[in-house]
Amino acid sequence: MYIDYEWAIKLNRSCLKMLGIWPKNNETKWEKLMTNVRIIVMLNIGIWFCLIPSVHSLLKIWGDLMSMIDNLQYTLPFTIATIKFFIMWQKKKDILPLLNMIKHDWLKPKIVQERNVMIKRARLACMLTIFGYFIMFTSFILGTTLPVFGFSMRYLTNKTDPGRLMPLQTYYLYDRDKSPFYEITYVLQTIGIFMVAAAYTGTDCFLSLLVFHVCGQLENLKARVMDLDKFINFESILSHSIQDHIRLIRSISIIDNIFTLMLLAALFYFGILFAFYGFFIGAMITQRNDVSVLRLTFIVIVFINTFAHTCLYCTVGEILVAQCEGVYKAVCECKWYTLEPKKAKNLLIIMISANKPLCLTAGKLFPMTMSTFCNLLKTSGGYISVLLAHRE
Image (cartoon, rainbow, N blue to C red; front, side, top):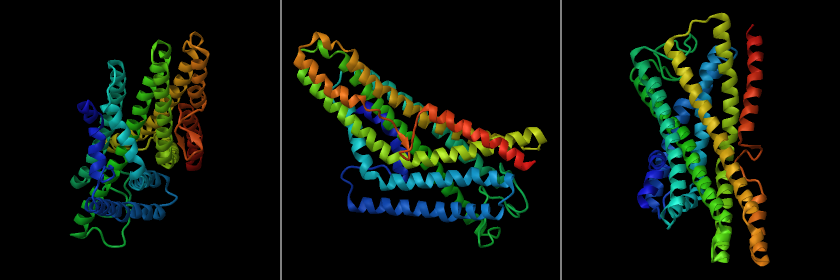
């Protein structure tokens, strides 16, 4: 059982532990201090050498849509990833009970069918994590190594890149082209990019781990409720099922409270970037702009990554809603009419708690479902024509 638990969490734990935002039980004061120092150093590198210079550059090239798109494809992810990093750091105490719940669920005795359901859900979460890490490392390597050899995947102008190439479109108050300032700035940008990429991808993969685990537990609860009439110790099984359901409801509420602001920021980020990339592709087709293969490849990778992450949010939210509704349907469809009146009456407790809709939300405003994702695509698509008209 412990082997299954380690297999289920090891990828997410490796990434978040490296960043210092993986919570631990019985953490000493010294370990907590060193972890906080590491987080503060990484945040300062990302903010002062990547985010603020990128925003400064954005203000200097304001009005040039192509340069702005090139800038925002870095500035927006940096902003979102910094928000995610900070929230995960501040919410470590809230995350710890969720991790303890996952460990308890994997280690407790269970039947083969329940273990198979948990394995199935954990395998899906692992596949998404591997895909996310692959895209992250591909983007990181392309973005940070090619400028060393004089190649860039960005939109270059004399205004944005008057001197030696850098991974990001940034503007500094000092002369960054002189040695050793150039080398130091390049290394610090690389560290900041890696930190942001790991925080952005690792947080989303961790969300999928939590939600898929809860979905697996809801699926097992549904199967248990469907077979309530077959158990001899009906009261004991029903009591355990009600407690388990309340525990899962609280877990969903905690997950939503932790990630709701991240999801809201991610929706705005995807909507803006989707509109800008649609404008870029439309301008490239209609005006036949020359675009290098490297830059086009990088834009496709970034777009696929952004699209996949946003779709992941809504997909796991949709699966969670379906599993919660499945528990309610299981209570309604179980053979309650064959039970004694007192036993049948006790089913109302779990039926009432299961009737309440549960879902992830973006800022407590929008439910994270595929319907929300489709509406976001429609809204962002409408702004593409506005941007194209503005260019003309």
